[in-house]
Length: 97
Image 1 (tube, helix red, strand yellow):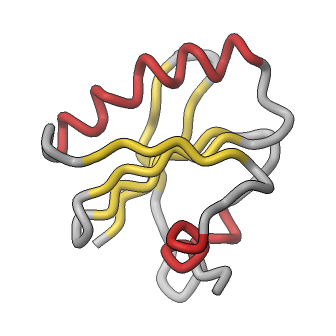
Image 2: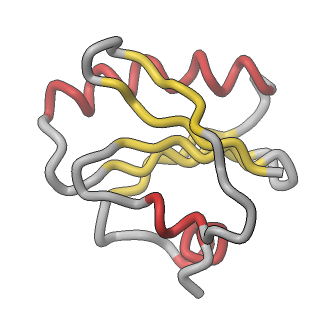
């Protein structure tokens, strides 16, 4: 099971977004967004940062991300992924491979 959160610049925090069935996760990726993917099966949280995100928002989201992780399980690892520099493991998670 995967939960997805989007960073809200106004709230300076993450909000859970609803994932529609049969919609691949990679369609959520947008260069103007910061997304958290909580992978319950592999005990990982991925913070994906779009290329157009301001450094201030990256900083604030990095501070907020552990709170979301801890909400699910504080033993999960938290990994940051930059737009265009996704690892193969992340690409598999979102359906790019």
